[in-house]
Length: 539
Image (cartoon, rainbow, N blue to C red; front, top):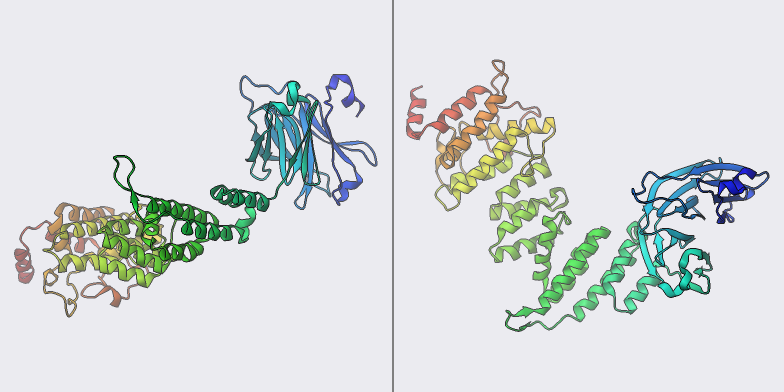
C-alpha cells in the first residue's frame, strides 16, 4: 500500500469515501483514489486491502487528446440497486459496480463523453453531477449515459482562477460548489417540482417534454396524462377566434386551424410516446370534437399513421377518418393509411365493411393476409369487381392490382411490403391464390349480380388477361418455372365452381400442377375467346 502513496506514483489529492450503505460493505470502510495510471478501490478495515486496480483507458481518446495531467475524480453512490463508483478522467466518465457480499467489482460498459475535462464530481438526486472546465454543471443519467440537464455557472462563479480547484458536495437536497472565493448553491428539484415550475411559467411544452423524460411515468404513473389533459383543456379554451386573418398580401391565414393543428401534433406525439392512445382517441378527440375541430384532428393523424407512429385507430375514430377523407374525395389517403395500420389491432368487421364499400383492394389484400392469414378471399373480392364492372372507369387498374397481388403470392412475398413470408405461409399463399385464379368454372353469380364473363372457361384468367396479357402470363410463367421438372402431380382445384367461403381445403394444399397452368396460359395468350370455347366444346 505504501508504494501507492509515494511521490513516484503520482497519487492525486482526491479521496472518495463510501458512506453508510446498510450492507456488509459498511464493515470494510471503502475508499477510492487515483494515481496517474489507475484508480484503486481500497478497504480500510479490518486490515488495509486493495480490492481492485482500475487502469485508465486511452482507447477512445482523440488523436490530439491525452488524459495525462488531467485529474481523476471519483464519487460513490448507494441505492436500492447497489453500490456504484463513478470515475471522471479528462472527458471520460465511467462506472463500476461493487457486489456487497463478494466484494467483486464489475466495470460497466456504459461510458459518457464530456465536451470538456471534468474538474469536480458528486452524486445528487440519483444523477452524477460533473463540473467541467467551461463552468458548466452537467447532470448525467447513469442508466443511459445521457445528459439530462446542464447549468452554465458563468465565469463569475469561480473568479479569475476558474473552476480548476472547485469542489462539489451534496447535502440535504442541495448541491454546494466551493470555488477559490465563492460558495454557490444549486437546489435540486424533483421532476414534479420542475414540471410545476414550468407550468407556473406558462412553459407547457417544456413541462410536457420533461414529464416524458421521467421514466416513472412510463411505468404506469398517470401524472403525464393528467398534465396532458390540463394542457388540452387550456389550449382549447384559449384558442384563437375561428376566422382567417390576412398578413400583408399573403392569402388568409386561419389562426385557429394552425393552433389546433399544433395542438393535435403535440397530443399525438405525447400519447404515442407514453403508450396512452386511449387518452388520444377518447379525451383528446372528444375535446377537438366539442370545439368543432375534429376535422383538424383527423388531418393530423394521417402523417403519423404513414410514418408508423400510430399503428391503430379506435373504431369511432377510424369511421370518422374514412368519412372525412371520403367527403374530400381523398380515399386514396385512407387506403395508404390502412396499409400501415396493424390489422390485428382494429375492429375487423367494421374494417371489412369499409373496404368493400369503397373498393380499397390494396388495403383489402393486406388486411385479410395479415389479419386472418387468408390469401384467397381478398382476391375473390377483387376478381368479382373485375367481372362486374369490366366496362367501368378504372376497371383495368383494378385488374392490374389483382395481377400484382398474384405475383406477390407466387413469389412468396407479403403484400405490399414485399417481405419474404415463412415457408409454410408462402406455400399457402401461392397455392390458394393460384387455385382461385385458375378456376375452370366460376361459381354462379350472386342473385343480384350481372351475367358476364364468369360464364367462360377460366374466367379469371380471361378478365385479367384482357387488362394486361403479358403480366398475366408472367404470373403463370413464374409458377411453372418453379415446378419440379417431370415430377409434379396434378392437384384437384378445391375452388372450382365454389365461392371461397364454401371451400374447405387441406391445410397443406399443393399449388396447381403444370396442366392447369399451361391451359390457363393458352387461354391468356389467345385473342379469340369464342374460338377457345369452341375448341373446348369440340374436345
